[in-house]
Image 1 (tube, rainbow, N blue to C red):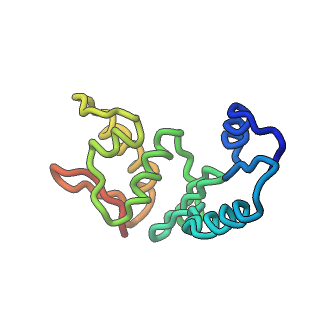
Image 2 (cartoon, rainbow, N blue to C red):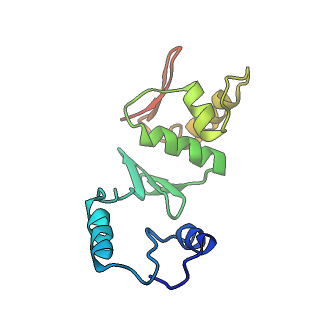
Amino acid sequence: MTSIGGVDDRVEGLEAGGDDYLVKPFAFSELLARINALGRRPAAVEQKTTLRIADLEMDLLLRRVTRQGRTIDLQPREFSLLEVLMRGEGRVITRTMLLERVWDFHFDPRTSVVETHISRLRAKVDKPFEVPLIHTVRNTGYSVHD
């Protein structure tokens, strides 16, 4: 609530993170209606900060990946690629989806960037361990599962 009621001030307040903006003087019934409206909003969905598949764990806050307790050093793009795959656990993630989500390409250029990064990721995440987690789905894409 504020006595500053110009349009620019209201916009600035909302852009700064406010959920609502109420200018004085105000009617108590309007304040109550706004509080009730906020209460009807769906609860915020808590974002996972750790992803796990079998013995592979990704800490999204610390940007750390471990498997069987051993730290796996990933480049930023490899981390993003693995995150997309892990968030889609058990589902096929197509090459186009990876290009859009990891490289922000909204078209399918004739490039081997996905395949190159998948190969590097497998060398770090799968090769040193007995059970591979990154799987190729022929002519479709990739999937991560145990």
